Image 1: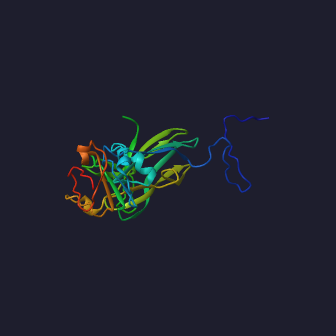
Image 2: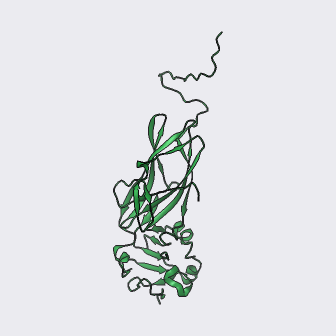
Image 3: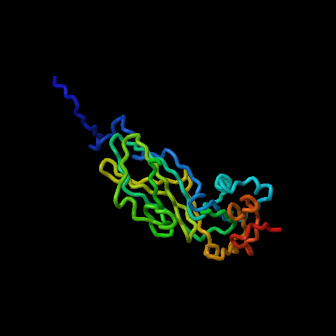
Length: 263
């Protein structure tokens, strides 16, 4: 009897196709370990818009931190203004290395949200990979991000790919940016595994990521907020109130006027 050692003989099904080894992980070649939305306060401020008018009493406003508005706004349907930022942790899920070849945003966009605006603009090392998507462009692909002064860089995956061994983790910081629209989107990964390219969609759990621009009137130098049904300002817009949010009249309020409350 001849005993062969060190030789892997592929199992074949009745149709002649290869059968997965019993120890080969199933499912997607890349697993999503976690998705966590992050605060944009240091990059774009911490402003949120709602599709509908939101009424908040002075007592309720005092309980909202202008430095952590997201923890209050997002569970109530608030959408990040200008930029949404998420930390995504991916893990290799094959015995042999898999390779991420590309990322792009699959988006659905419409006009900016104008129901209610909570306005708190900005005052001014790890293995994380940072990529950004310009949602104002068709079929947005992952691009390097150089900050607001320099904007978008080149296509990230034009010059590199990301390889993941079995159970190896990689953290991505993903930025979805719009200056003209309101967008919902998921990230589509293109992954090379076993000689084939497969795709995988990643969102905020079962929901898409969401972001909205300010309206064109509001982005103008005069800061015209009349497009919004309700307006609350805080942070550097209400220094006299130590940054607390106050209700102001969107028809008459001008940015930098000190956040005088609506009577």
